[in-house]
Length: 291
Ligand code: BG6
Image 1 (cartoon, rainbow, N blue to C red):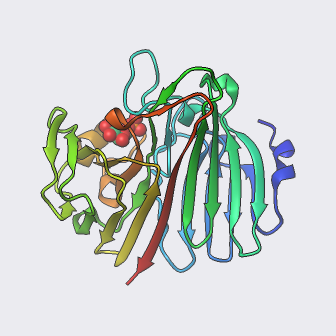
Image 2: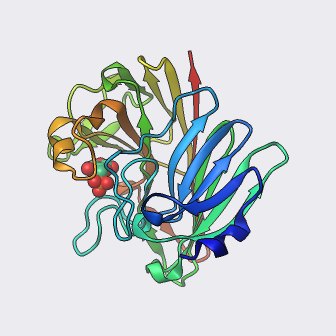
């Protein structure tokens, strides 16, 4: 990608575009409330940090930044499928595709927005756009329009990696009473009995029919994170723990202590089906507070 040509989308004091890790085009976004980073590779938000707070998103020190490889951390976009697929890349091709930078803008209230488009050549037969708005909160909207003459089915997930002080002090709230598929226990359907989910081993759960927000409490950082969403009926909670961490080449053996994924989307039986002309928006807003 021609970084010089992308610079037409720069906004003085708000958006700077340059070669990031691996030489990939990166937007550095600065607002009166926060900073953020976004790669066109995967339309991947790799960083968000509110002024006066530690960074909100985890990014692995072992992540690759290369064509054809997903970035480990931040917010990978899983689309148009979630999880493994025979004959296709895990979590779909969107996170491996270089997205088109369609527009940038800075609002009078200080928020800064970036709009990206999945190129047609990626192979999805509808229109897919991603709107990222950076302010005191981080909002991400995956907008899909069925421009075909037939029903369009897909899965989608904003696979958000949160940075935490120590996973031993973290709990996730808001999922009690909900059904989930336990990927650790061989995809058994279970019901969440805990008000506060603790992390003491590998956790890999797909909660179904869950439009509710999730709260992450981080005891070490004294931080509360709120994951608010609309247009999403699935929540995935993931921490790879010891064995899986060691098995992932692009993830440090000890990094599981400092991250947790709470992912918002529509997967499995919650997948989206759009009639011709219909559109859907998966919208996630992340906010946080210390103390
Ligand atoms: C989670 C899945 O969403 O993503 C896990 O539930 C998976 O099963 C994890 O291991 C990471 O996937 P990947 O493809 O980025 O290694």
